[in-house]
Image 1: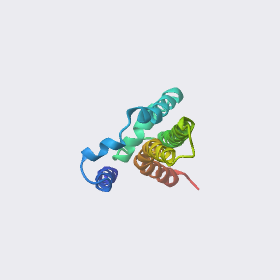
Image 2: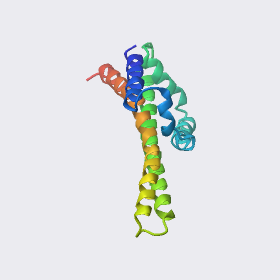
Image 3: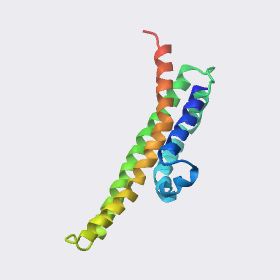
Length: 155
């Protein structure tokens, strides 16, 4: 229940931070970049057989508690894996975007070239935005699962 409140609060706070309504989200949307970050996460979950455990993490967050501790451990590892791979591909997208931008500049002596690099930097930073959004959604899940695992382990 608290996780749902957190998600609604985060959505409200992000919309408030960019100036209100959903219409202001358009400059931050880039389908290719989103898929560049999201596709490896889904592919890794599928290839490791962790997609079910990842889905179970959300069930645990919304109140389902009748599972063995090994299910919590699997879900914790699946969420952690998505956090890591989203960060890796977000930074990879940023580096690829910036290197393509710098490579496309023909004359570094003009001020106009600097303007193009700054504009391209802003576009490349969108690939850092998506992992940060994924982290803001999944990090509380990670902490909740970890807290549960530490409570259930005997000392």
